[in-house]
Amino acid sequence: MRLAVLKETRAGETRVAATPETVKRLLALGLTVAVESGAGASAHIADAEFQAAGAEVAPDAAAALAGAGIVFVVAMPDAERRALIPRGALLVGISGVHADAALPTSLAAAGIDACALELLPRITRAQSMDVLSSQSNLAGYRAVIEAAAEFSRAFPMMMTAAGTVPPARVFVLGAGVAGLQAIATARRLGAIVSATDVRPAAKEEIKSLGATFIGVEDEESRAAQTSGGYAKEMSEAYRRKQAELTASTVARQDIVITTALVLGRKAPTLVSAEMVGAMRDGSVIVDIAADAGGNCAQTVPGERIVTPNGVAILGYRNWPARIPVAASALYARNLLTFLSTFWDKEAKAPKLPAEDEIVKGVLLTRGGTIVHPQFLPSEAA
Image (tube, rainbow, N blue to C red; front, side, top):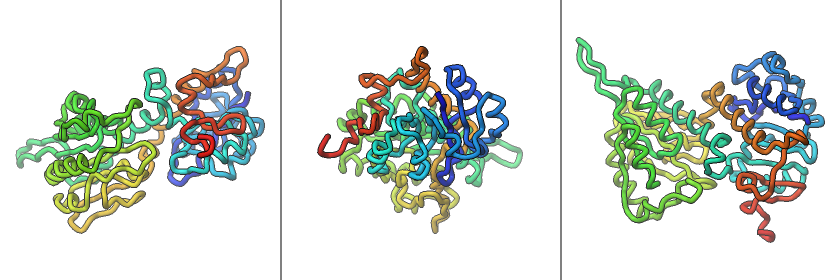
């Protein structure tokens, strides 16, 4: 069976869905692998490296997809490139289905069996194929590095003959995978770190990394997590109490890193314009949630801005793509693990049991129909 790896065409996408390491392991499954020329260029992987690993380097997407039974991507290909995918092929990647309601219908009509790995259930068996976790981990790290580069002082306390440089104060909003990595990275750089999250499990996780927990603790906060491990949307009363606490905390910070997301919804606004206005000149806000609208009211998705009171707000899109070598390596392993888990060694083909919890979670379309219960047409839901 032929597996095609496509070059990403979305603006700003620097990652690739396979690496020479994973190509070798895909070949060991009995696959042939075709990589579109230039697919790894932005992740510093040359075509020659893919060839040395045993892959065919195809001149374009059409050549890579010719006869392919499996297609690996980072982001969902556009309609023109999806039209090149053979009917019955298995497409594996990040679908972005929550932002494109017509996508499942389009994939079903094209006869593509699509797996949206961002929908993986948060269960132990799925951890090694969890693309959101692997990419968010790197996003949290990169956010702190970008903040340090933007900040006009040092992160750690520095005692010199000329005087003492005080440590930076960093406040992280959202202690999921990205937030916890941001906390850990900021602590390693020597900052004084505090953090908040609505989920009850977050308090101990924050404290275990040496940060101070800031948060409203009440009955609602103790039930603020879904069974899948995601944050729930909170009531207006809770958000008001949390906003008051956040406002007093933000005003004392040098750097604020926001990471809060609610699956399938616009990111909650956690930092208001008034909070930004209370921050000191030279402070920095890094909004990892910019792709989902941003946690800061003044974030401009895709841009760096400086407010009238001198606060830099970094609202860059696609944070994992800002560290493409590591992000590609982890993402490619996620896809490899997913395929290997559902690989029929005798048939040398993927086998996706409909009753499997992971398959139920990620499979959008199969055999020309929409199968994911969350995205069924209203009359079939």
